[in-house]
Image (cartoon, rainbow, N blue to C red):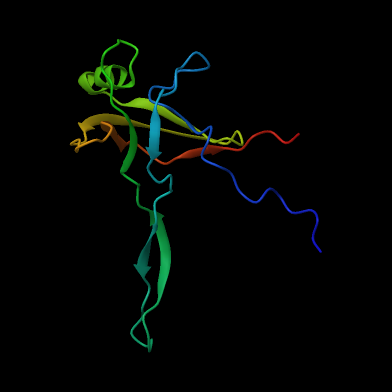
Length: 148
């Protein structure tokens, strides 16, 4: 029996999202609900089929950039420090900002992008949510936690 297995998995409890990461004084969203997929772009297939081939052949090319990333959070705009007001200022500036996702195990995923906000249409007896959609500038940079 293998007794040296790593931990089976992690709960989403403790995931943090920083909408304008500028260092250790940065604030994470207060009421994060969902994160989009963090993924590197898929590689393009380049056709390498020759005239004497019986089937198609391809080789891997460069990766396509993953353009979009979304975070969903609880809507509240009553206070200046509310998630919605903080993200509204970033949206109004119309500039790319650094973003950071911290996982409960200490792994960090960094990127940058320009946010756009949407208030999801609330229904009867439901909580109001908003979404920040980021047009990403590049690829996710991953930093694993230091080994103990």
